[in-house]
Image 1: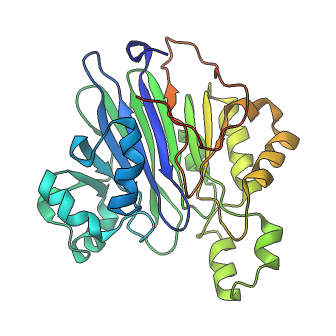
Image 2: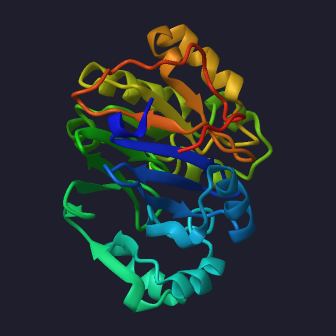
Length: 289
C-alpha cells in the first residue's frame, strides 16, 4: 500500500519481560514522522532492529512512555535523548520516577489529558491498573486512523472498553496462560502480583476485551504484546483465537521478544478497512516504511 494512502504504520521491535519498544510512523504528504512507544530495549538492539527500515535514533521526533519499569524504559537512553534532544512524553504520575532516573526535566513533557503531536495527531491517554503507580494506555489518532495501545495492565476496566471504540488497530497485552502460570515454579508472591488485578493480563482476559472492542471497531490489525517466555507461547495465543475468534486470525500478529513484527500499515476511515494478509504473523519478516 503506497504511503499517500496510509495514515500510520507501526512495527513492534520487541515485546516481553526483557524489553519493549515499538516504532510508530505518522504519515504525511511529504514524509513520515517517527516516534517510539517505550524504549525498553538496549540502544544497540534498538539500532539493529531499526536499521533494516532505514531509520536511526536521530530520526526520532519523540518517545512516548507507558511507564518507567526497566523493561519499558532503560536509563542508558538518557545520553542519547540529550544528544539528539528527543522529547519524552509521560504521564504526570510518572514525573518523580522519571526525574529520579536521571531524565533531564528539559526533555520531559507531562500529560494527564489528551494532547496533540503536531496539527493532525491527537493522543488520548488512559491510566491502566499496574502495580502501585499504574501504566498508561494510548489512543493514537492520526489522519483518520485510530490505534489503541494497552500493555502492562492487570485488568480490563469499563473505562478502557468505553474509550477503545472506532479503532482501526489494537495492540494489547496477552501476558500469560493461567494454567502455565499456576503450574510454574515462580514464587507465590509473584504469581499473586501477576494475577491479582494490578499485574498483567491473561490470554483469555485479553481476548475477551479484543472481542468486545472489535464489535465497535473496524480492526485491520490486532497485536498481542508482552507474552511471558515462561508462562505463555505464541501457539497458545493462536489456538485461543482459532477457537474463540477465528474471524480475527487474519488480523492477528503475535509480537515476539527477539525479533520485530512486520511493519503494520493502518489506513483511516476513508480507506479499505480489511487486512491484506492471509495468515497470522509472528514477526520474522520486515517491510520498509
